[in-house]
Length: 263
Ligand code: BTN
Image (cartoon, rainbow, N blue to C red; front, side):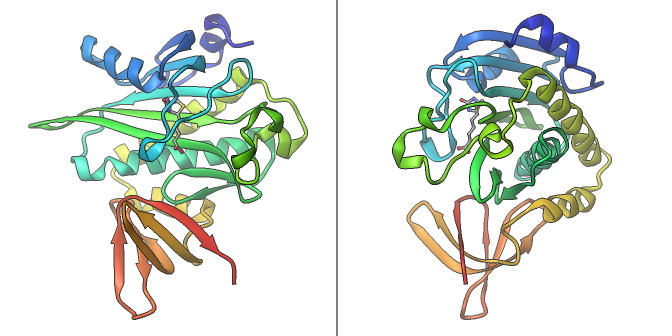
């Protein structure tokens, strides 16, 4: 069971998780986090976590299924000293942290599909939603919302996404202690965020490349009403995906849905 006391006992960071706000149920932890940031003078490092969400939000206006008692839904507030176009790097840092924590804690090979899907055996088990407020001086606040299917059974998933999604318990065969696992993720986020604060973008991008399953493959990327097919060649210093089209031309994409094409 998640509780404020259990969550307090696993936090260990100097920056991330200095305060944990636990809610049994809420609309969306991203919305609560944004509201908290508005009220607080120094919101950086606050983590908002809920046992369930009634209006969990996914990327591109989708819903994020958030039943109680089984998964992790949380938002980390950060105020990095970057320009708004570099905000995506914080998402990459979060994706590296989650994939590494899954490998270390659950012992299964999690991979990152650009930009921020966490896959196990080719199926989605986690996602990251970045929302931000900017001002004249740059980023006012970043809300990094993370959802991970931890102990959810496949019967709880709608049939239409069962072939595309999974949970860590389904893939590892073992029940996972959500509070301990959160502690491991937050510690990893602290590590990857500090890499960015030390201005070592390339070190972070190299870790991301090591964990990712997109670069090097043929892909189709849907971005609004545009569809791009080619070979994913890498990501640039803003975390954008570079795709080489069959014409040889390079296309740089800042958002979209990737399908990895099998040869
Ligand atoms: C995606 O579409 O892959 C991103 C999913 C992000 C879901 C998380 S759950 C915690 C936080 N609160 C939300 O409403 N969304 C994010």
